[in-house]
Amino acid sequence: MDDRFPSDLIATLDETEEVDIETRSPATGERHRAIIWIVTHDGEAYVRSVRGARGRWYRELVANPVAGLVVGATRHGVRALPAADVASVQRVNEALERKYGRSRASTDGMLQPDTLLTTLRLIPDSRSHTPGRRELATRGYGLTVGYSRAWSVALAVAYGLLRLLDPLLRAWWQMAGLGITSRLVVVGRRSGRPRSVLIGLLSVDGRWYVGHPNGEVGWTYNLAAADRALVQRWHAVPIEVHPVLLGNGPERDAAIRSTSSQQPFPGNLMYAAAQRHIRAAGVYFRLDPIS
Image 1 (tube, rainbow, N blue to C red):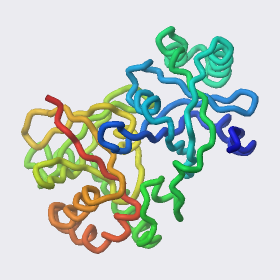
Image 2: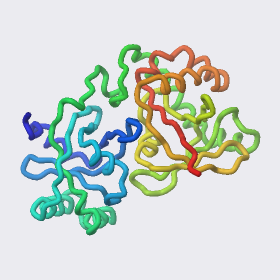
Image 3: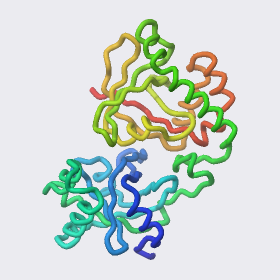
């Protein structure tokens, strides 16, 4: 197996500030995704955990080194190799400073002693690649049968209108509620500041689910990168939750089906009609309350 990425991918990684690393829990097999930095040196790709050995993606990658690297709209199968030797650590330190700059606080965080030992080299591994059409829409979530360009445009227009109405919707929600509409607060992956968004809080068999029917958006990126978030139903106390990104399977399908019955009119009609497209493009999470 070739242990080097193609030169065009290395060039893309050089120009890309953030990528997604996709790992699996060794206990449950659930797929998780985190946004991380990546650097290259002499045609090789390296990553490091800013949270040291406490980082979930790092722990899962050490337990199972076969993973997915999502760059833009394309998912690449990778395998992680330890690279905490003195020479590799120094090369990665220098690459981080060149790419991200010493003036950024996050760069300093990547150069702390407890992070150095989490340095990993990524090499290609085709066994972890999940091929599929329309990766731009699905971002590796799997199903492509049923993807509809027409529904993609229709949902984009609908959600664009909701963004325009967001101040009014928030005011109305505060006063009178809006069905299953709840407030989700999650830390921005780039800003580090809390971000608030109104979402439909779905309930299936006593569990909570949230998602976007048309693929990745800002808040789903933030939620995928976070270990925890706050969810607040109307006039209720905020509850801290742990988000779990759902892969293809019965649980995700059930959450998607629930949108057509639980979303308020007329959104429920759109969700019902667009079910096949949503299964192909939607991004959904389970929210597990943290005791």
